[in-house]
Image (cartoon, rainbow, N blue to C red; front, side):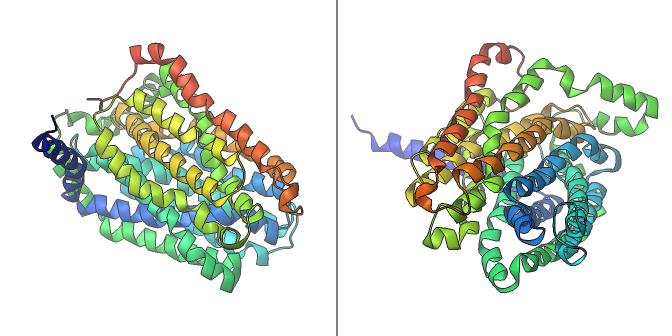
Length: 463
């Protein structure tokens, strides 16, 4: 028999489960607030530049689609490779200093990108191209430090009670910043061109630096760490053990705890490569696909659709995190990667507004299910004082994904979605069908290895 009281009780418990993590996070520190604000600004700037970068190299350095895609790949893959080598910076100098240094590098890089077309002639390896590459180098060095530092800071500023939502909110807020270029970029681009947009992002990088310097002051950071440590149930006495070691002891410590020695960890991060290609297609393929294969509103405002994924992530990630905090992490990885990969086959039905929206929404739900949990897992299994290097190593397959995807995305665009052909002569359906078969390999691999992985799967946040 239908029992209204039972239904009300279920709804009340569900609402509490969703809202409680948000309430817990609202009572966190000024330092965490500053970090989140910085991440919004950096997300806006990073996604805004990446979304226009291929067109920037087409227009200002006169590179073809393949070469332009390669340049985007140099930036995105270079960032991940940089994390591999520079992730340990935060372990050595601390999160606040690491963030300030990283934003300084990115500021110089973005200034060079904005001025490169005026500093030399266009063409492959000519002056404009060289200066643009130097700008990319600055961003690569900076961002290689920035993300590991940010996640290391979350680990220090949160407790067991607030950690899951802390990681989820950081990921969501960066993606909120990633959505904003879809609103800011079109009017600026139409009035001042891509270079005008890039100068806006230079100003936002300066603003992000000041946020870290003044809001995440040294006093605020120390207070946040002290407050978090007072509430943690785990031992925090060893938090500064690395600072007391000699150089030889530090090297021995890093070698002993090097994450790639764990075969399950190694398989796990590499198995995610196929589905991660869809992240790379967000900037390598979607901007040119939406501007070439569509007419009207979609074509004129392609930045909005390219950046719709981030705003959906901002809305969905904290909700999904609240509902799945106690769920088995490995199961969430399987379900999330499948939900993310499957809608790629919808785009294989043709370039329609409905198909595009279904793909963006469903893919984002899948991303919200697994990506923040993966980042939290990597940060939490890291030994004391090694969060930065673990985050860097955990991102290494992402480096390979960006490299590989950038090598073939331009070829697929030129052959299946060329700029100089009418819509009826394009074959975007086959392009997305192939991309779908690639992406679905991740959940298949995770399912096949489930028994082996679960024997030694390390996680601190399973319920």
